[in-house]
Image (cartoon, rainbow, N blue to C red; front, side):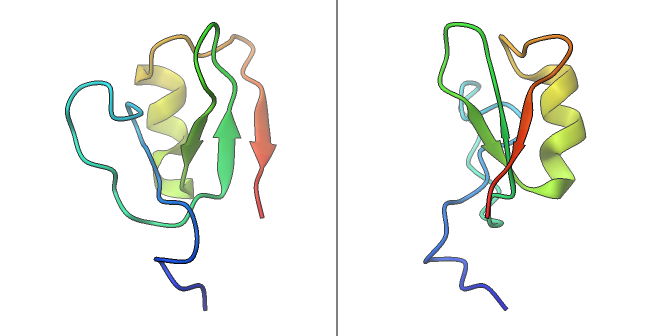
Length: 66
């Protein structure tokens, strides 16, 4: 089991750009974005981040983070 405080927290689905707090789950994926830092998300927010986050490349570039 992973300690939530030792791993990076999910930024999803918007990457904190809309004033919403991070979800707090551990990061498992990194989504590349155009002219922005990659969006680090949990499995729950991977789909919504691809559809809703600003600057997501298409086709999406997704990296598994361990």
